[in-house]
Image 1 (tube, one colour):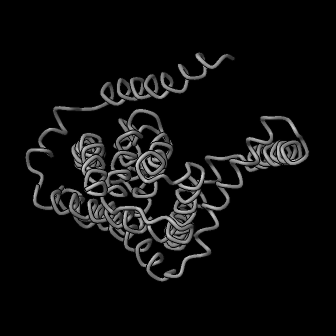
Image 2 (cartoon, one colour):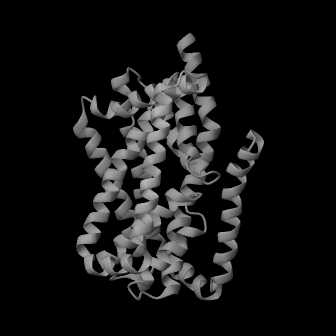
Image 3 (tube, rainbow, N blue to C red):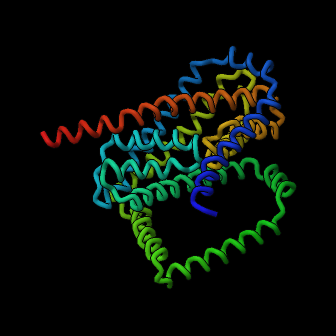
Length: 323
């Protein structure tokens, strides 16, 4: 497979999936039954949810400095904020491309080596995954019997073990080859990996670990509160159990991570999660669209402004330095 074909698939496949899910969503969507929920929604709660989402993103940008400082890089706060919003916006085009673009912003404007900047982002994701798995663990405790029965009927443990074993063997073979080979590709990969590892390990070199932990907890508390507060905008979802809220939150989080920012899929995931608890479909899907739409609107506006303002801001900073 040549480079052009790979690039076409990397860009085209997510778009095709988004189109498919868009068609599937709207073909199954009782629009005439959902529109009334948008008309009757309490937009005060929606606005508060957007504010909480904004605070989580600002906290993420601020937290980033605790990973960059141990490597000797002092990055401007505005550049970090704009890089975060640009990353979220880019993820609507190609899933996870935002992380690459986010690291590239620091490389282009702050002279942070790409592999080190990218390594700090991986370190961030590791911390975020710990919190997400903690939320999953709490949810399992709250809804253990129900979830265990659901997993037993939905997954085949033997197949999962086989795939895991194959993945481990392939990973070991690739690691051994890269470690021993002297080919140009292997040398480049090892050099890149060293810089990447330095970025990842920066999480253990922080002098202000407690502030990093505080921001990590704050980010996820804002995420959960944002989700809960926005449910209050839909009258039919008032009184939803904490177990249902957490399962829907987790389902939505995974769709955002696995697709183009959850486009078209997020409302379906929320509807499916709530349906497990016999919550009516129409208000559930309507809430999914309200939740996804409000946060997406914020990202599109702030991400677009960041794209436009980033070069202008840094050009002014260079002028100030020269002056």
